[in-house]
Image (cartoon, rainbow, N blue to C red; front, side, top):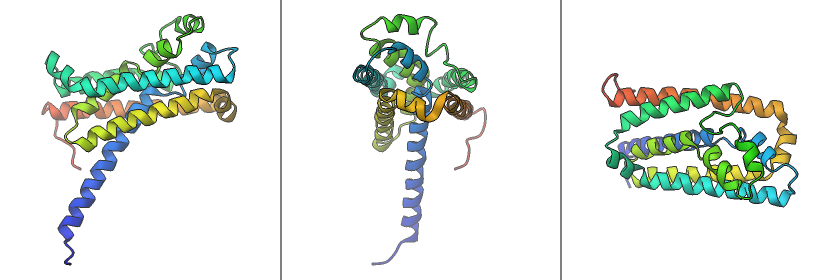
Length: 228
């Protein structure tokens, strides 16, 4: 059997592209859902609740986020066609939303796009608080939905779509684990640790927003596409 270096080079390049897209999908979705930033609100919503009820509310929130983001992943392309929206336009709009959320996260606070004033008080009195407002819009908010739709707009093969769906499922699972064990997470990280983590995620989100702008401008032909 003769070793073909060109095949190995192609395989290595394809593998690199797969890994890079998968990491982009997971990071962009997870940073926008950000269960750590939702911890203070979740604790306020479930104040006085026993661990079983907290896990039940966390499960409802995670499942709601999974269903909502999964639905937009499957319908994103149809929505683009229905409204005549181009991918560059959505990338630029998504960049603005991500930038606003990221700037709020740099100040260790929830963005108004994810949590409106009075949501926490109203949710504490509701039995289905895990669905609204925890699942939507605190976890699956406009930023996360936009990110999913932008990623779907870039899909060119089945493995990319699979990477997006797996990223959504992993994010939902992490949300359940973080929120379902919120007391333990707060004890381990502390309020200061959570604030630092949220700020780091905010910084990465601002960088991601900048990348969305670059991609949008490149797709419009305003600037040259990046090499690699």
